[in-house]
Length: 387
Image 1 (cartoon, one colour):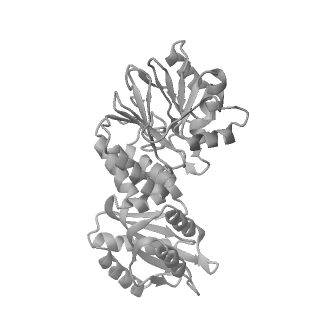
Image 2: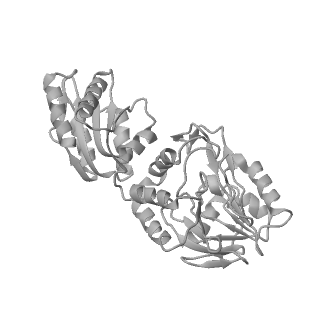
């Protein structure tokens, strides 16, 4: 179990769902998912966010245990997605004197989700930089629009210097998942937040002016040490710069001949001294994992069969996901295969050219059914241009 101890007055009251296999009905999970919520005990008691519907009973049990017979005075709503906001209605009914803290967009959304509740006399509207003084602790609010919904805000606890970062710095996986932070945090970031790099950069600039000693996200472990490491990762990811020098080969093959060509391309690259070459069969790879790796490495090679005078669907979906997430600043090589009228290369090139600052290695390698010696010579040339 990850150490989720915060301090004497600040308590983690969230829970993990170890049975969930897919998040947001699209992200495959091998090790479940955590949903974090926090309680600050002071002259005024403050709950920071609720959690997902499936864990309501456990969350209420944690909250009541932490409250020790007291009542919450405020609920801070960082983000209105249902995996964090589902229990707002339950908490509001249970504690009718509790104030709801959010920005104006928060309250616009609240009425959409909870039509049966009148929040008009309970809402506590905050703006950029506002401070809520609850006694020893003082909560300062910073707006983080489109990280990754328009109402998102983060909370900085000034006394203990803690950033409650909403979905920022989150990761997939239950809290006791035995895995490194980087991979599942990267997959989470590019899958969910990746489109909004500019907005993340704006939030990071605000964070640089704060003395942050701990980061408490809504998903994943509390970050207590070496915070520069995590902040630097977010800076790289949100700048759309490569995290590592390496070549990711994404292959979309129908009967295996395109995959054989991709494997040969990987062999050629390794023989020329490329230390990091990663090959993925998109028909078998988790799409979010493929997107993550494309952003991770400095170079990309896409290899695909032609299909219905267009592009084989696994590759089309992969490139569409990259485009949606503002893939940019990369060097890309293209390999197409087609038995009578190759079309994949044209389709891949058109999509890639619609992205920002993509350097396409010429020429496109065209395979007719199976690769030949000329194709291998072209791979040697492409490999030289990838160095």
